[in-house]
Image 1 (tube, rainbow, N blue to C red):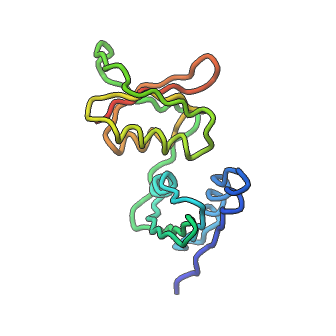
Image 2: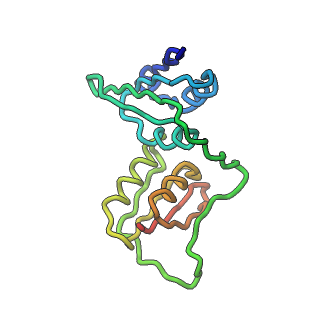
Length: 174
């Protein structure tokens, strides 16, 4: 017997300017074994596809009108990847420190954006590059979820915190 979907409507949170990520993760943690999450949002939450994909969920999305989306996250047969502890730095760099990268073609300032917009905007910028070209982005925090996405797409990056506490990353398209 299959369980009904766990329904989570984050549209009110988003329309009020809030960040629903914590509510989504709490809902995922509350799921019964084998239970799916039915998420309603004001946009297609592509970064969440990757976050929950790393936990073994497969998304099925459809637009339901007025720009709203319904996404069913179904537990897959694959084993979820280990979570990266917050205390471990996750920086992928070129093995040869002497190698020089081309100057970034694009500089993005994503500091004033709310999640998931900094990640989405950065990934969109990378997709506009040719292999080997670089992009720099200034982000409001260390982009742990972006690191996994960059790795899965075959991109290289270098990053560090600036003196003001923002994270500056330079990404070379793979």
